[in-house]
View (cartoon, rainbow, N blue to C red):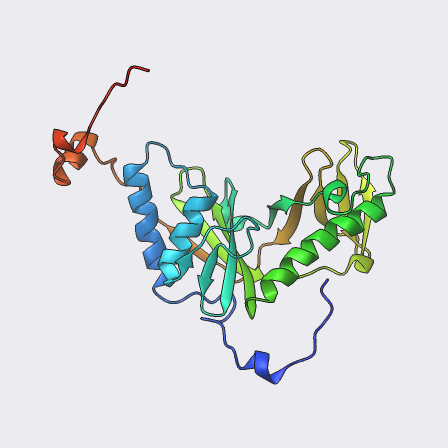
Amino acid sequence: MEKKSPRLRTVDKVKPPYPLNKFPKIFGFKLGEELIFHLAVKSTPSLEGADWEEIFAKCIGATWKPSNVGLDDVILGSCAWGAKTVKSNNPTNQKIVRLISGRNAPVYSFDESQGTNVDPNHIGTRVLEIWNERVSAIREKYKHVRTVVLIKSNSLEEVVIFEFDTIRYDPDLFRWEWNKNNNLQGYDKNNSEHLFTWQPHGSQFTIIENVPPDRLVVKVHKPDKINRVTLLKNIGFNKDWIEVKYING
Protein backbone atom coordinates (compact mmCIF):
# COMPACT_ATOMS: atom_id res chain seq x y z
CA MET A 1 0.00 0.00 0.00
CA GLU A 2 1.47 3.35 0.99
CA LYS A 3 5.26 3.45 1.01
CA LYS A 4 6.76 3.87 4.45
CA SER A 5 7.74 7.46 5.18
CA PRO A 6 10.77 8.48 7.26
CA ARG A 7 10.12 9.46 10.87
CA LEU A 8 10.29 13.22 11.35
CA ARG A 9 10.73 14.78 14.79
CA THR A 10 8.49 17.79 14.08
CA VAL A 11 5.64 15.58 12.89
CA ASP A 12 5.99 13.06 15.70
CA LYS A 13 5.57 15.85 18.26
CA VAL A 14 2.08 16.65 16.95
CA LYS A 15 -0.10 14.12 18.72
CA PRO A 16 -3.61 13.16 17.59
CA PRO A 17 -6.57 13.74 19.94
CA TYR A 18 -6.46 10.04 20.88
CA PRO A 19 -4.68 6.89 19.62
CA LEU A 20 -5.99 5.43 16.38
CA ASN A 21 -9.19 3.40 16.89
CA LYS A 22 -9.06 3.92 20.68
CA PHE A 23 -12.05 6.20 21.15
CA PRO A 24 -12.44 8.31 24.32
CA LYS A 25 -14.20 6.47 27.17
CA ILE A 26 -17.30 8.66 27.04
CA PHE A 27 -17.61 8.36 23.26
CA GLY A 28 -19.71 5.17 23.18
CA PHE A 29 -22.22 6.51 25.72
CA LYS A 30 -22.57 9.82 23.87
CA LEU A 31 -23.11 7.98 20.61
CA GLY A 32 -25.77 5.82 22.26
CA GLU A 33 -27.58 8.97 23.40
CA GLU A 34 -27.49 10.38 19.90
CA LEU A 35 -28.85 7.16 18.40
CA ILE A 36 -31.74 7.02 20.88
CA PHE A 37 -32.61 10.67 20.21
CA HIS A 38 -32.41 10.02 16.48
CA LEU A 39 -34.74 7.04 16.76
CA ALA A 40 -37.19 8.95 18.94
CA VAL A 41 -37.68 11.89 16.58
CA LYS A 42 -37.17 10.41 13.10
CA SER A 43 -40.07 8.82 11.26
CA THR A 44 -37.74 6.07 9.97
CA PRO A 45 -34.47 4.67 11.41
CA SER A 46 -32.33 6.36 8.78
CA LEU A 47 -28.88 7.75 9.49
CA GLU A 48 -26.95 8.87 6.44
CA GLY A 49 -23.54 10.41 5.82
CA ALA A 50 -24.15 14.00 6.90
CA ASP A 51 -25.97 12.86 10.06
CA TRP A 52 -23.06 10.60 10.98
CA GLU A 53 -20.51 13.33 10.35
CA GLU A 54 -22.36 15.71 12.66
CA ILE A 55 -22.95 13.09 15.36
CA PHE A 56 -19.34 11.89 15.35
CA ALA A 57 -18.06 15.46 15.60
CA LYS A 58 -20.37 16.15 18.55
CA CYS A 59 -19.33 12.96 20.37
CA ILE A 60 -15.59 13.76 20.24
CA GLY A 61 -15.94 17.53 20.73
CA ALA A 62 -14.81 18.35 17.19
CA THR A 63 -16.00 20.75 14.50
CA TRP A 64 -18.32 19.48 11.80
CA LYS A 65 -17.18 21.01 8.53
CA PRO A 66 -18.81 19.30 5.54
CA SER A 67 -16.33 19.00 2.71
CA ASN A 68 -16.72 18.49 -1.02
CA VAL A 69 -13.68 16.22 -0.96
CA GLY A 70 -15.11 14.08 1.84
CA LEU A 71 -11.77 13.53 3.59
CA ASP A 72 -11.97 16.32 6.17
CA ASP A 73 -15.62 16.52 7.22
CA VAL A 74 -14.66 16.55 10.92
CA ILE A 75 -11.81 18.61 12.38
CA LEU A 76 -10.18 18.51 15.81
CA GLY A 77 -6.82 20.19 16.23
CA SER A 78 -4.30 18.65 13.85
CA CYS A 79 -6.59 15.73 12.96
CA ALA A 80 -9.17 15.46 10.17
CA TRP A 81 -11.70 12.69 9.53
CA GLY A 82 -13.76 11.56 6.60
CA ALA A 83 -16.91 9.79 7.85
CA LYS A 84 -18.59 6.81 6.14
CA THR A 85 -21.69 4.72 6.83
CA VAL A 86 -22.39 1.14 5.75
CA LYS A 87 -25.51 -0.97 6.26
CA SER A 88 -25.27 -4.53 7.56
CA ASN A 89 -27.67 -7.21 8.77
CA ASN A 90 -25.10 -8.19 11.41
CA PRO A 91 -22.78 -5.25 12.19
CA THR A 92 -20.86 -6.97 15.00
CA ASN A 93 -19.73 -9.79 12.74
CA GLN A 94 -19.19 -7.81 9.55
CA LYS A 95 -15.76 -8.68 8.10
CA ILE A 96 -15.34 -6.22 5.22
CA VAL A 97 -16.93 -2.94 4.16
CA ARG A 98 -17.17 -1.23 0.79
CA LEU A 99 -16.62 2.50 1.16
CA ILE A 100 -17.72 4.84 -1.61
CA SER A 101 -14.77 7.21 -1.79
CA GLY A 102 -15.57 9.86 -4.36
CA ARG A 103 -15.79 10.23 -8.10
CA ASN A 104 -12.45 9.77 -9.83
CA ALA A 105 -12.78 10.64 -13.52
CA PRO A 106 -9.66 10.32 -15.70
CA VAL A 107 -11.61 11.87 -18.58
CA TYR A 108 -11.90 15.06 -16.49
CA SER A 109 -8.63 15.01 -14.51
CA PHE A 110 -6.35 13.90 -17.36
CA ASP A 111 -8.49 14.53 -20.45
CA GLU A 112 -8.18 10.83 -21.29
CA SER A 113 -10.61 8.18 -22.46
CA GLN A 114 -11.91 5.89 -19.72
CA GLY A 115 -13.89 3.28 -21.65
CA THR A 116 -13.52 -0.50 -21.34
CA ASN A 117 -11.44 -0.55 -24.54
CA VAL A 118 -8.60 1.20 -22.67
CA ASP A 119 -5.85 -0.75 -20.86
CA PRO A 120 -7.32 -1.44 -17.38
CA ASN A 121 -3.98 -0.99 -15.64
CA HIS A 122 -3.55 2.46 -17.15
CA ILE A 123 -7.00 3.60 -16.04
CA GLY A 124 -6.55 2.00 -12.60
CA THR A 125 -3.30 3.91 -12.14
CA ARG A 126 -5.04 7.16 -13.09
CA VAL A 127 -7.88 6.46 -10.64
CA LEU A 128 -5.40 5.95 -7.79
CA GLU A 129 -3.43 9.05 -8.79
CA ILE A 130 -6.59 11.15 -8.44
CA TRP A 131 -7.23 9.63 -5.00
CA ASN A 132 -3.61 10.16 -3.94
CA GLU A 133 -3.72 13.81 -4.99
CA ARG A 134 -6.79 14.41 -2.81
CA VAL A 135 -5.16 12.72 0.19
CA SER A 136 -1.93 14.68 -0.31
CA ALA A 137 -3.84 17.97 -0.38
CA ILE A 138 -5.54 17.18 2.95
CA ARG A 139 -2.30 15.94 4.53
CA GLU A 140 -0.68 19.29 3.73
CA LYS A 141 -3.22 20.87 6.10
CA TYR A 142 -3.47 18.22 8.83
CA LYS A 143 -0.82 16.02 10.45
CA HIS A 144 -3.30 13.19 11.01
CA VAL A 145 -5.98 12.13 8.51
CA ARG A 146 -8.38 9.32 9.34
CA THR A 147 -11.54 7.65 8.09
CA VAL A 148 -14.20 6.75 10.67
CA VAL A 149 -16.76 4.12 9.68
CA LEU A 150 -20.20 3.44 11.14
CA ILE A 151 -21.59 -0.01 10.34
CA LYS A 152 -25.30 0.24 11.09
CA SER A 153 -28.11 -2.27 11.42
CA ASN A 154 -31.34 -1.55 9.58
CA SER A 155 -33.02 -0.59 12.86
CA LEU A 156 -30.03 1.42 14.20
CA GLU A 157 -30.26 -0.55 17.43
CA GLU A 158 -26.79 -1.97 16.83
CA VAL A 159 -23.79 -0.18 15.33
CA VAL A 160 -20.06 -0.80 15.03
CA ILE A 161 -17.50 1.98 14.81
CA PHE A 162 -13.87 1.82 13.76
CA GLU A 163 -11.31 4.11 12.15
CA PHE A 164 -8.12 3.83 10.14
CA ASP A 165 -5.49 6.13 8.67
CA THR A 166 -6.45 7.58 5.30
CA ILE A 167 -3.52 6.70 3.06
CA ARG A 168 -2.18 7.05 -0.44
CA TYR A 169 -1.76 3.92 -2.55
CA ASP A 170 1.31 3.10 -4.63
CA PRO A 171 -0.10 2.25 -8.10
CA ASP A 172 2.79 -0.16 -8.75
CA LEU A 173 1.45 -2.53 -6.09
CA PHE A 174 -1.88 -3.21 -7.81
CA ARG A 175 -3.22 -4.81 -10.99
CA TRP A 176 -6.55 -4.04 -12.61
CA GLU A 177 -9.06 -5.89 -14.76
CA TRP A 178 -12.56 -5.37 -16.14
CA ASN A 179 -15.28 -7.55 -14.61
CA LYS A 180 -18.37 -8.95 -16.34
CA ASN A 181 -20.33 -5.78 -15.48
CA ASN A 182 -17.69 -3.62 -17.21
CA ASN A 183 -16.52 -2.19 -13.90
CA LEU A 184 -12.84 -1.95 -13.11
CA GLN A 185 -11.47 -3.96 -10.17
CA GLY A 186 -8.11 -3.46 -8.50
CA TYR A 187 -6.18 -6.29 -6.81
CA ASP A 188 -3.11 -6.49 -4.59
CA LYS A 189 -0.36 -8.03 -6.74
CA ASN A 190 1.02 -10.00 -3.79
CA ASN A 191 -2.09 -11.88 -2.67
CA SER A 192 -4.74 -11.07 -5.32
CA GLU A 193 -6.97 -9.48 -2.67
CA HIS A 194 -9.74 -7.36 -4.21
CA LEU A 195 -9.26 -3.82 -2.85
CA PHE A 196 -10.85 -1.35 -5.27
CA THR A 197 -13.80 -1.05 -7.63
CA TRP A 198 -14.27 1.77 -10.12
CA GLN A 199 -17.30 2.34 -12.31
CA PRO A 200 -16.71 4.08 -15.66
CA HIS A 201 -20.30 5.34 -15.76
CA GLY A 202 -20.34 7.92 -12.99
CA SER A 203 -16.65 7.37 -12.10
CA GLN A 204 -17.54 6.10 -8.61
CA PHE A 205 -14.50 4.84 -6.71
CA THR A 206 -14.96 2.26 -3.94
CA ILE A 207 -12.32 1.10 -1.46
CA ILE A 208 -12.77 -2.28 0.23
CA GLU A 209 -11.58 -2.32 3.85
CA ASN A 210 -11.24 -5.15 6.34
CA VAL A 211 -13.02 -4.51 9.63
CA PRO A 212 -10.31 -4.56 12.32
CA PRO A 213 -10.52 -6.91 15.33
CA ASP A 214 -10.51 -3.87 17.63
CA ARG A 215 -13.79 -2.06 17.13
CA LEU A 216 -16.46 -0.41 19.21
CA VAL A 217 -19.94 -1.97 19.41
CA VAL A 218 -22.88 0.13 20.64
CA LYS A 219 -26.34 -1.34 21.18
CA VAL A 220 -29.34 0.73 22.23
CA HIS A 221 -32.92 0.14 23.32
CA LYS A 222 -35.38 1.40 20.72
CA PRO A 223 -37.40 4.25 22.31
CA ASP A 224 -41.01 5.14 21.69
CA LYS A 225 -41.50 7.80 19.04
CA ILE A 226 -42.02 11.31 20.35
CA ASN A 227 -45.58 12.37 19.62
CA ARG A 228 -45.62 15.40 17.30
CA VAL A 229 -48.31 17.22 19.25
CA THR A 230 -46.47 16.63 22.53
CA LEU A 231 -43.20 17.81 21.03
CA LEU A 232 -44.72 21.04 19.73
CA LYS A 233 -46.31 21.66 23.12
CA ASN A 234 -43.02 21.05 24.96
CA ILE A 235 -41.16 23.62 22.85
CA GLY A 236 -43.84 26.21 23.49
CA PHE A 237 -45.12 26.33 19.94
CA ASN A 238 -47.79 28.87 19.06
CA LYS A 239 -49.35 29.91 15.78
CA ASP A 240 -47.50 33.23 15.76
CA TRP A 241 -44.35 31.33 14.80
CA ILE A 242 -45.78 30.79 11.31
CA GLU A 243 -46.37 33.44 8.68
CA VAL A 244 -48.19 32.48 5.52
CA LYS A 245 -48.49 35.01 2.72
CA TYR A 246 -49.89 34.50 -0.75
CA ILE A 247 -48.38 36.75 -3.40
CA ASN A 248 -50.29 37.15 -6.62
CA GLY A 249 -47.75 37.58 -9.47
